[in-house]
Structures are given as structure tokens and as C-alpha cells.
Length: 50
Image (cartoon, rainbow, N blue to C red; front, top):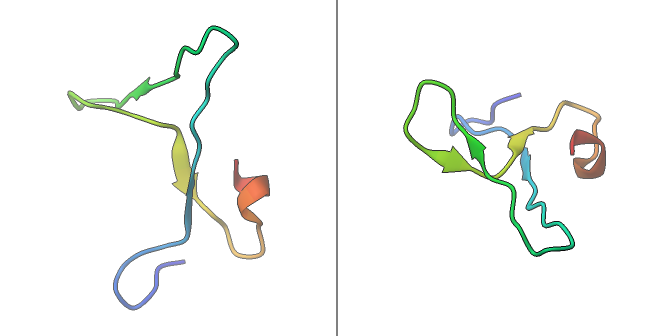
């Protein structure tokens, strides 16, 4: 659900393995990378959204 400014609750996560390698996801149809993230549904906790 968007607020009046056009934003929605969101969660992001940084994944690091035991070799200290960080996971970055390549965006589809874009030339950029990002950490996993997404919106939080109504009634969902940030932990559940991860």
C-alpha cells in the first residue's frame, strides 16, 4: 500500500556467506545491481517479508 507521497513500506537484506562474499542481484533489463529487497504487505512484519 502506497502512502500519500507514493512510497510503500519496504525491507532490504544484505546476505554474506562464511567466506565474506556478499550477494548482489542483477536487475532485469537494467545495467545495475542491488541487494535483495521488496515491499511489505499489509499485516506482514519486516521479518516475514524477508
